[in-house]
Image 1 (tube, rainbow, N blue to C red):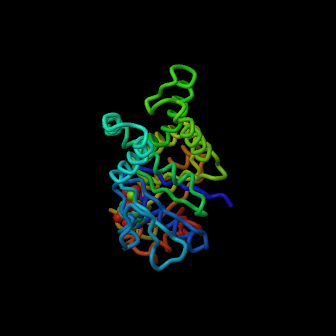
Image 2 (cartoon, rainbow, N blue to C red):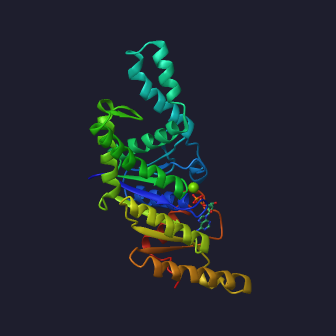
Image 3 (cartoon, helix red, strand yellow):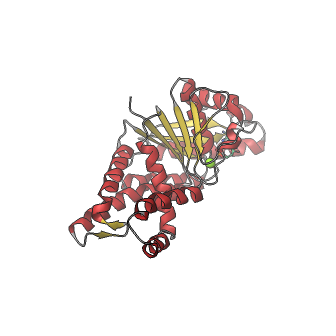
Length: 295
Ligand SMILES: Nc1ncnc2c1ncn2[C@@H]1O[C@H](COP(=O)(O)OP(=O)(O)O)[C@@H](O)[C@H]1O
Ligand SMILES: [Mg+2]
């Protein structure tokens, strides 16, 4: 079976990490070897799983088949630089290496590095499921646009000067193939799911509309939306919660109207913090067994 990729995207604080982890636990419990990896520097998988994780694939305690990793942007940049410089060390003298090193110190390198790490996982075939908990939307979409941009840039340069901002075309043809493969996997509905998480509120709805359109522009289809944090109907009994409940229901209906061709799932607001395996199993049951519908 080919590895399946699931991306969770959305504004900060809407529940991406929580929904990504609940999904990962669900698949691991089904016997699928699952990796959850976060590209969001603000994410905290260690809190969710109550154990140290960090910049390495870590087996999660107390559950079979589940692994996690938190990508550290600084470490990813170091690794990327080293990967670029290593083959040059044997070919070039000190001075040339210094120039190469300097060229690899810009902000563009960080972007490339984060992306390169991410592509590594898209090439990985030792998991059944890889779940990406991504940084807030703008950043993620930029990351996903890169292979499209670069692939085009490499192609155009190969017809013209033979030079690219990444070096001579001949040396990076291999990378072009890598980017093309990643893009085709991202666009393949059989292999990749793209899920947006949003709160039933105006700002979150607007952001979701914008991001879904941006993804569409680069040929990626959103496969599901999770509207998270809904106050359960039976709790909407005092004026404060009733008013908030009504507001949320209004945005839920708007979302259903606007995204009428995308499946929408709802997730209720829980009365406690989401923490530890058992709590996330409960969230997963709501997600996958559909007992969360409050309509
Ligand atoms: N349905 C929910 N019920 C209760 N708390 C939630 C729910 N969804 C998320 N949370 C809490 O809200 C906070 C933000 O969620 P998180 O998943 O970290 O969001 P994001 O990854 O989008 O920033 C966390 O403390 C999480 O435990
Ligand atoms: Mg998060």
